[in-house]
Image 1 (cartoon, chains in turn yellow, cyan):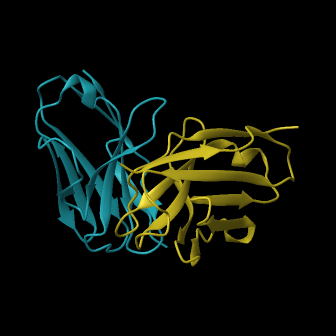
Image 2 (cartoon, one colour; image 1 turned 90 degrees about the vertical axis):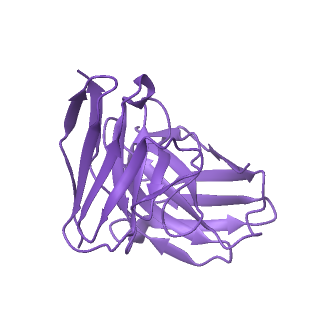
Length: 119
Length: 106
């Protein structure tokens, strides 16, 4: 059974770059034609899709975040990563990684990791 | 740009009762709609995709319907574990979530 786990710093300073990694277990990140995505949720608020990457490296980003987001995949480590630049307090959120097994719906999800932007 | 709305914002239901949640898209998303359940402190769980297809392991009391701009999630007989927030999400173009409906105990 496929499992995803987010990792990375829980605290990032304003104007710096947020970096997170999602490690996939129970299957190969490049063995199937799946998309791998990042979604975030500010405390007490709703869900926002950040972007997705195909196992081959093709990327799709939320237009509202596109200028600040980079998603990459490392098939040798069975991981994909998120970088969000020039962060502000508005980027404080729980960040989830997830699989898109068909269309762009998400299943399963990682447990999420809280990233706080603060000096 | 598509806008997703959900109603009601909060639904108070007694255990064993039927719950009907609505999701509306500002323009047609065909059947490219998913539903998720989220409990406090947990990641969302996929319930429905393709507007009406139950995800693996989801009980039959959850059903989805609709197409185009109007969608419904029905929980036929609410169990204690069903009290949660429910989100719809369209994926006709880039993924976009609705604001959620909280189902709480009446």
